[in-house]
Image 1 (cartoon, helix red, strand yellow):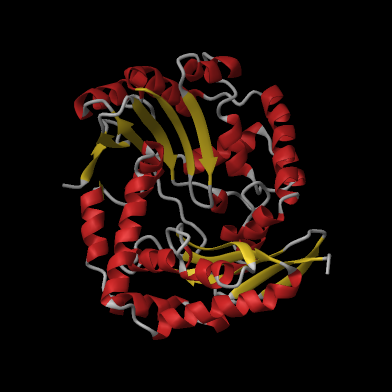
Image 2 (image 1 turned 30 degrees about the horizontal axis):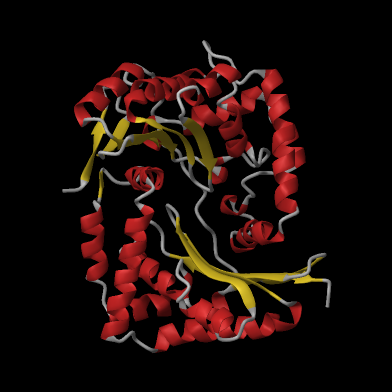
Length: 410
């Protein structure tokens, strides 16, 4: 049976996946990220993620951090294009402590001016780090090309100038518009009964006032593929190439996830790794990625190589894409591709925090979340014809955008 999403008395949604682990995880997942920021404040969603821990009506910043760490727990957060997550990992008997703390942060964060100014300098250093890391920076710049002049193309960190001009009233306005009943899910993976967790969440979240109302996101405009080369003072050339793909609601999403894993996923035996690294020795890293968003998806391939081998590597990548379009997998190839992907998913779920974030993300869009057994059955039913179909849908090379950070050391 799928995991069911439960409604608290104030309408807030709760997803719980029981486990027998001594370590548990609880989090707040919010369907609000970089694309939901006002145009004049890029980086605002990420700034909220940083500063929401800087004090509540009854706790200062130190007491917020120390509340979980003093019992060996961990408090963390993340921001993406469409989502902001706040979560805690802890020994299972500390569920009451974690739930109460996250409720306090969510409903009663104060965002003190002194702490806001201090945190700006921290984010400036984070921006410096990414600017000094071309293999990281290239993904943000690539997305800016694919989603040209659209909110999805905004850098998650923003710029030093935009962050400098964020004030408390901007934070409160962003939270008021986006942290609404329809956009929030509480998620739990841990050793506690559903009944006990519901009582805890009713106690600490159930009385919280949640604003209702829908939020309209800017739809994607016409996609125009681009190619750009930028000179960088690096010893390696970095390349990202890709195009739009399926959104999270598409029935073709799961087959394409399997296809992406065959092409350039986690294994060393992927087609790209075998072609570019193992057979030719041209790159240390070559991988492909697929991210499904609420109304679109993004497929990309990344590699880093010597500047003189750039075009050769690109040609090898294109060949592997064309092969998947033209040649259906044989029955044995398909069998082992499924086995490998299912095994990787099972290993990933050994990290219960990853399971919480993945399941919570799905719960933002659906009232039920599939179990591992259901996911396995879905994957096992994928056919070679389906993989060929999605390859032909997405691997249309004239519609690829390509960004190259070219090494100046030639």
